[in-house]
Length: 272
Ligand SMILES: [Zn+2]
Image 1: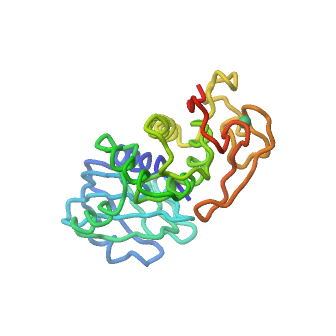
Image 2: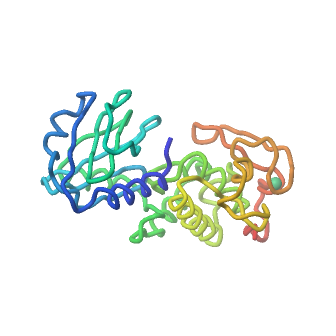
C-alpha cells in the first residue's frame, strides 16, 4: 500500500503539472463518469494530502477525494494521451500532462464537511507543516498496544505504512513489541523526528530510502535497491548482519533486528 510520502508527492506533482489551468476530466472505465463530468473543464486550484488521503479542489464546491488503497495507482501517461489501457477510473489531461487513476479504493466527490470528517479521524501527519506531534504523543501514552501496531494506526499518526514502521523502529533502536505507553519522551522525539526526516526524503525521491549514505558509502541516488533499507524484506540486518526476526504485530508482519532493537530499553535509544 502506498504510504504517506507517495500521496504527498502525488499532491505536489498533480498541482505542479495541472494546477491553475482547466483540466479535461473523463472516466474511460465509466465508473466515475458523473463525477468526472462535474470537474471537466474546471481549474485545479489546490491539492492536499493528509496521511494516505488525497483531496483536489477544482472550485466546484465539492472536493475530489482519492484513496489509493492497496493496488490503486495515479500515474502520468504520454501526452497527448493515447487510448487508455486497463481500467482507468479517472483521466485528467492538462496542457502537457496526462494522469490516469486506476484501482483506487475511493474516488469520489465529497463536500468540504466530509473532508473535515475524514481528516478528523486521523492523527497528525508528519509531512504536514501544521502537524501537532503532541496529539500522537498522547495517543501512544494511553495504550499498551505494541508500538509496532500503533505506528500503523492512522488515528494516532497518519501516513506511516508497513515499510516505514519497520524502518523507523529500527533507526530508533526500538523493539516493535514494546508497549506504546513505555515509549519515553526522548524516544518519541526520535520517532517523530526520524519520521519527518525519512518521509521527506521519500517524498522528494519517490522511493523509500532509510539507510545513511555514509554508512552505505554512496549517495542515496546511487544506492543499490538492497542497500536502501535496514530491515524491511531482508534476512540479515543491513547494519550488523544479525539474522532478523519477523513477528506479526498490528495484523501484519514486521521484521526487526534482535541486536539493534533489544526488547529492553537501552540507555541511549538513538542509533546515531
Ligand atoms: Zn542489527
